[in-house]
Length: 386
Image 1 (tube, rainbow, N blue to C red):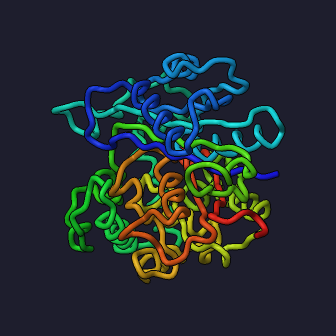
Image 2 (cartoon, rainbow, N blue to C red):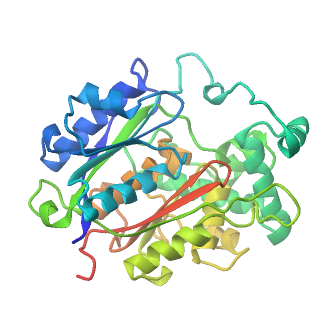
């Protein structure tokens, strides 16, 4: 027995106001169920993830009128949650604990007439120990810690701003072809270089968008999937990695990620190697995370991610199409559902002007926290072993 994604639901995404995360989530689940040709009553599992706003599982289930669920949970590994949810849904189906599971992420951090950056302002936690030292030195934001990670990679391997910029440019080239993308104006390396600093060495065009909306997928057994409305996207393999880096001497922080663990696990389960991967849908909260993930998955040697990006391999017509919908840098920011949804689009052949030439084996990644969590999926339009 195997499993497949059979439904995809995407609400309006981006600067969409007036709806709560729960309402966004409910709309996305309804859209995903309808996309699969199912009814809400066919669901017996629901996995929920949310960003800054709340859409707790039991409340969402009540909003949708779901009864007698066999699986219901709220999950949070930040950007790694989507891929983790899909793997848990698949394992539940394979074990017989459930038959048809919806996984959904929803968020509504953006407000009218306020900056995108203000959406993620938080009250500072109670700092103590070594964490208090870093806070005293000014490391109080996600941007600052990712800037530290990027700088360490630069210092160790000679990675350049221009190589990060190449990722921003290639991602935007894909977004231009995506009608759902928020940012569709082409950019150049000069545009990247002239964008303002956010936290050096990361510029504005190195950083992801902030978006409102929700995305949901429905997973069921592959045997059942054959008879449903849309082509199934088969789940070949999955894995997680949680490195536990500490900001101290000897740590791998900034140099490696959990992809070192999750990637080999997912590929081993799928029975593939990096040479078999047709395209990548990578978590791109920053240009740097794309670069370091490519290295850790083994698409190039450690320290050569910048050269790979600068070669043009990631963009349209390149040897390794990556983030073909524009990713979180240029399309929309729905945590790990951004790369997952594009993988479904590509596997189904629904990409239109951005459809990659090859879609046989697609790698999907999710990165969560400050490089704390990583999850990987291997998906395909074909049944495993076919």
